[in-house]
Image 1 (spheres, rainbow, N blue to C red):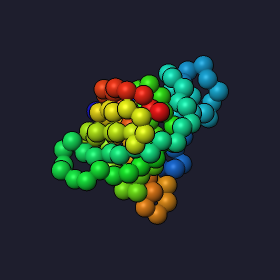
Image 2: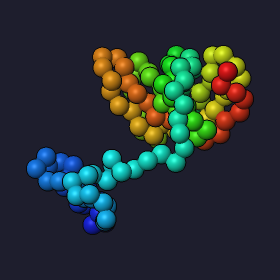
Image 3: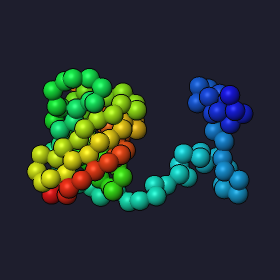
Length: 126
């Protein structure tokens, strides 16, 4: 395990240990807060259907919170596994994509924010 990975594991599991900061940056600012997206996301609510490529199941209806050329954040009533590959179809318009789950965060009871990395897409969102 690399030294950086080991130090991240230590500070993430101990609340008294501060996370590392980037050189030349203000001390006390964790690296995560300094990271920025390479592209802007547009806040757009679009109803989409998601289903796994790995498991035969019915499509699940979700709604996007924001979209970009390479990703989307959707709200789902069920959790999805990180790195799971999905099909995504917009209910309106011709947008279709293959996607990978980048993260899954609980938002509340039966509500999860799913970060999707679009691997291949065609059509328009509207």
